[in-house]
Image (cartoon, rainbow over all chains, first blue to last red):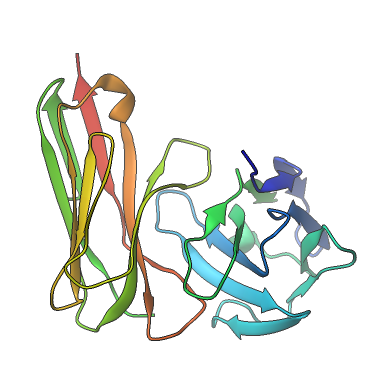
Amino acid sequence: EPEVTQTPSHQVTQMGQEVILRCVPISNHLYFYWYRQILGQKVEFLVSFYNNEISEKSEIFDDQFSVERPDGSNFTLKIRSTKLEDSAMYFCASSQGLAFEQFFGPGTRLTVL
Amino acid sequence: GQQLNQSPQSMFIQEGEDVSMNCTSSSIFNTWLWYKQDPGEGPVLLIALYKAGELTSNGRLTAQFGITRKDSFLNISASIPSDVGIYFCAGHENSGYALNFGKGTSLLVTP
């Protein structure tokens, strides 16, 4: 069964460093998303991406964040200068259509020291 | 996004018991989704609901999209130890892209 994959599973970085989180969405899906989950809290929406542009973003997704689909399969989230409060699980998700069910990857645990 | 109220926050039950949890919102949702999350893993989709009043089953799981479009419930029948995890409701408001998640119901099942 097709699934969303994410790499790395765990990323440790120093405050102020740039990180890139990678995702391979399900191949016939057209909509891509990033969410984050701070330990013990609910899943929070960051950004959605469709037709090679951002379609919606939350207040969390400030100028330090960017997304890119560099080729036909990968979808990346970049954090330019990480802060301690960026430590969280980051989930990529994809869907076939707008307001369709979203399928989530296993997540990348980001730890900022 | 709109605050989703999910209850109960946690449940501790014996194997074989039935479980019910629900989510409410003060605004109308166009879809309701129920996910299960195991520790350190991503949310796994259990059931998706698209129409007010819709009742959908997936094995021992049954979920309903409330008539007012402001609530949904999830029932698990005859619970087993592998049902342990955190269950999240989530939904789309209007025609938005973002999924708005509840805070989760933590389920513990004792043999």
